[in-house]
Every structure is written in C-alpha cells, then in structure tokens.
Image 1 (cartoon, rainbow, N blue to C red):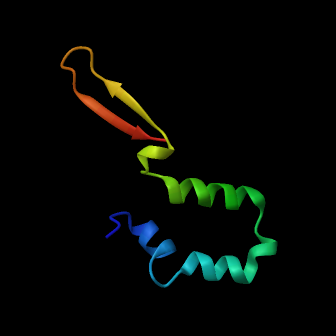
Image 2: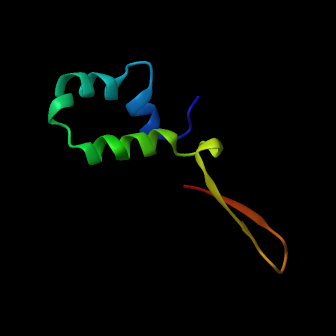
Length: 65
C-alpha cells in the first residue's frame, strides 16, 4: 500500500484523478498535467534521484527528484 497519503487520495482504486481529468481534462492547464506526472513518479528511483554522502561519516541519503 502506498504510504504517501496524497498519492492514496489521487491514485487509489477510486481513481479520483482519472475521474477529475475525464471531467475537466480540456480545462486543465498543461503545467498542472506536467506537475501531476511528476507527482505520480515521485519516489520512483528509475525516474531519477540524487545521492548525498557525508564525507565525514559516509552516511548515505537518497533524494528523489
């Protein structure tokens, strides 16, 4: 199950985003569609991430982009 509450609301089995897009699709600005696609892909390592490594203790942190 998706841990991000917003992703669960938008993209769960009720398909809230798809219903909204079907109803208002022609009125939705292109930037909104672009941001929705980025939001949907957030957390997917195949879509890109940044890797931060502390030079002192070598702690590793991933930041999804």
